[in-house]
Every structure is written in C-alpha cells, then in structure tokens.
Length: 128
Image (cartoon, rainbow, N blue to C red):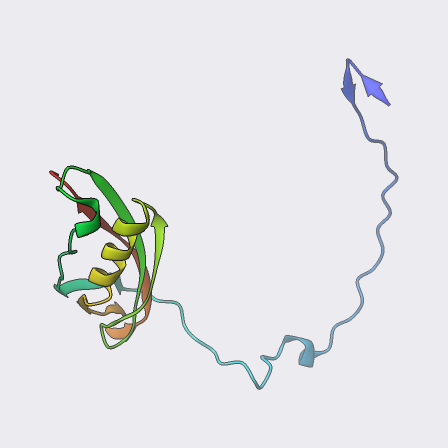
C-alpha cells in the first residue's frame, strides 16, 4: 500500500502472555565466570620503543608514509600480536611490524590489575 508516495506496511499485531520462567533460567551457567566491569582503566604505556629500520630495498628515505599497527599488549607488557590496519606498502609494513614486536609496555590496568589490551600504533616513515 502507498500513501503520499511512501510505502506503508499494514500489520495485525497480537499480544499473548509470556511463558513463566523458572529461577534456573536466570542462573549463571557453571562453565562461565563472572567478571565485574572495569571502573578505572588505564591504557598501556610504552616503556621500550624500537624505531623501524627503513627498508634498503626502497633506497633513499624519500618515501613518506604512515603505517598503523593494531597491537595486542599482554598482561606482562609484551606485544602478543600485531596486525597492519593501515598500510604503507609491503616493505614498510614489514619494517613497522618488525619494530613494534620488540616494543615493551607497562600493561593496561583495570582497577589496578594488569589486563590485555589492543591499541593502534602509528609508525611514520620519511621526513615527518
């Protein structure tokens, strides 16, 4: 059906009583753990940074690029995983990954306790 050029949907809606739920339906399954929400979160802080090595294959450092790497920092402050999210090209991506994998952090903290956390890291190449 159309009204003033707009499509209109007509439907009959019926309501019925919801079924009764037992108390057991609201219990936390035994294979799950309860975790409270984080009230005070602090980001990881870089404590050791490795500068990327400019790829010799590219030649003179005339290429300006930014590579963004998504880094997962573990509870020990070490990089557990790294993935390119914004590329600068294969050679620069490899150089950026090699560098950030050597970085060390003070880990992120949730209410004072170390937690794993992912964050983006920007690596700049060229005259920036």
